[in-house]
Amino acid sequence: MMNRLFSLVLLAFVSAGLAAACGSRQFTTVTIYDTPAKYVRLEFDRTVKKGTEHSHPISLTPEQIAAVLDGVRIHEPLALVRGDILEEPIPRIHPAFTDKEIAFYAPLLALALSKATPEEVVTFYQTRNLSANTREVTSGGLFVQRDELHLILANYRSHTHYMADLGVAETRDDRLTPMQSLAPQDGRVDFEPSSAKRQQQVGVLDKLFQWDHREVAVFYTQLPPRPLVKLDPS
Image 1 (spheres, one colour):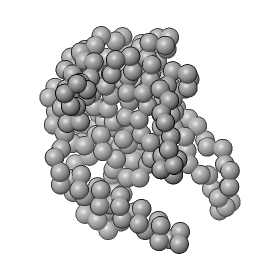
Image 2 (image 1 turned 60 degrees about the vertical axis):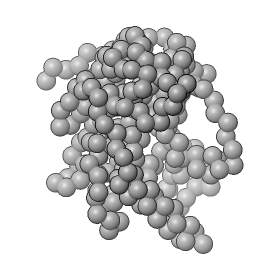
Image 3 (image 1 turned 90 degrees about the vertical axis):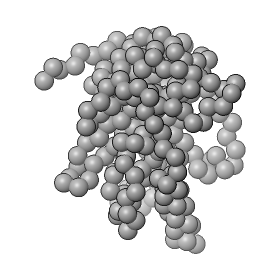
Image 4 (image 1 turned 90 degrees about the horizontal axis):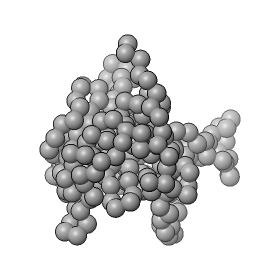
């Protein structure tokens, strides 16, 4: 039964990935920073409808953005100990962004939000080589809606070779789809302190698929600005 359930979930993910790759892609409107390994861009948000536009442009300091990035947490799923799955494990919780990543991205994201229109979303992307033919990607986007800053972490160290490992040909360029997950995400995205996070209603289905939740909405004005660490020029 568990094997059949796993197969159905896996098939659904592969089908969704193929459908997304064949469908309309996001397109860049403004490039803030771009190298082969990292970028920050503005992209047209196809989900925006009349009356639901984002609160852009908006002037936030890099220190305000840093405070939000600093609070993003990854809750790891069930832990394996000596080959056994714990029945009630305590998830391993750790920051999603390092001090160096926060210092790099915060000024760029603040600049992007100051240039964004109500119909645009800020996207970010970074990749790191793991081997000769495999990379890991962290990517997502953010936007402001009234007093909330929404951060979507679509990929957290996702392996680019995941679909090929399943025997499915790669059909999309991960640089073109920062808001789409490349592989099933192992950890749930959360925020600390929880008092600054908008609480969402959790239904039965939400509980079943809680580890797939990739977005946090933060009351950013409640957070004290976070000083940026100095980046090593080297």
